[in-house]
Length: 317
Length: 317
Image (cartoon, rainbow over all chains, first blue to last red; front, side):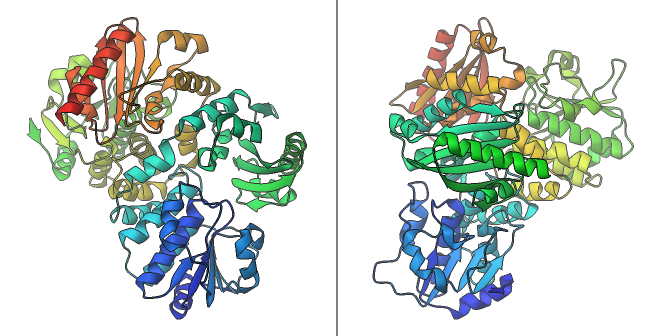
């Protein structure tokens, strides 16, 4: 694996053609926005480029990716992964490419270095900030590039609220906003909530559990709750940010039952708790203030394990 | 009344000393942040400057204003109002100064021109953006100036989510963030919610009413609800943004009972509904997408009047 600067990454992309871009499981705004912007930029340069279809795409992000999905017959010469820290986060249909990723653009410190070339900057709030810097060296920014880049940056930094936001995030946003009206996108991504989502949030708040003198809060999204409200994937997207909102807590734990016996853990933490270290104990990873893991077990079993992992990394610190 | 540019406003302030700065009723982050930053900057220039104590200050914004409150004996030579559109929004203790405001710095298009000099820019997301530009001409930015400016801008544009956010808002934020860590401020202002607030939100969602084929949503905060939960002013701050979050609506109306028979109306609207025009019918004002009015009557009476005002401005458009 070779580490690449922004300029080296741009040079490498200039040499490529027939490019397939990969996104991660449970795709978020950053992986989709980064991939769509990069794909658009490569096409603007006259290259053939596609996104590998991601079966888990939600209605929220589908519009950004839809113009770029590869057809079944596409046989790439080069493969690029964006915002994917490890092969373990490849969707099933991306696994055939796991040993032949030519370039990975990422901002996760936990990146395993699975790609031949890696452009990593873990000071970036979003992979889209790195993709922005690469595209700036390749082709003029257009509205079609600016919009998905904005979505990537804004979603990963909670619309400039989270601690990963930097002056650079704001400067890039200023430049992108000059090219495309983002007010409706902001409204849809950050403010509008479906009535199903509002009802689920109310229930999660009513049933939340507090631990460790109220500093740790656990919220749960069992499959039964999803079924009761007929919630779609879009209805529960980013619901894990809710736990971090409870005053007096600095460790928000959300347990989401993906299927019976398989629980997705999301941690959102303050400085006292290293979320990445806690999730690493459970086989996951992420960032210091936001991390996740997927664990087998019942809700009660997984809750006990994550509380134990949080206690362990807290006592270490 | 003389209209002033940024440079003229800076020149005017350079000539002043013994300055009293006024903020508006039910003070928000913009009026307090603008006033505190201006006061700090004037003091950095060696001037005597104070804020007129605002009895309605909440725990959220008190820390920004506390170092600058004037004592009882302060007798100013000059009076400056920030973010106050009309004398009708002066707190009671500011009324003695209503006929002698030397300078008003504001971003409300509805400003009535009550001050001798007016520096108005209604393209600014916040009065704090104008205050920032004025301070840039007067004295070096410091962390003590940057923090309240950031609070003013971020609170008035919903942390860069609302349609009033411009590239300039982001560029100023980038500069301010380089001087002061805003991550904890963002968390406290935009994410953390007290358990009382979370419970009140749940109730408001459960009891919301939809009108006009679901495009108009009405939420209510009767005094009885506040009493039931023992809610403080800080608990209900900005609760009016909740109504605008309901999917499928573009006109969020919040009715808050200030005292029996006196209702504060808050409107948050999409392009279809001119909130300022609707509130003007009811004796209030504000911006196109966010406006307010205070009206006498029962909840039911006021609800009927605001729905009628919304219908009237919508049919005009």
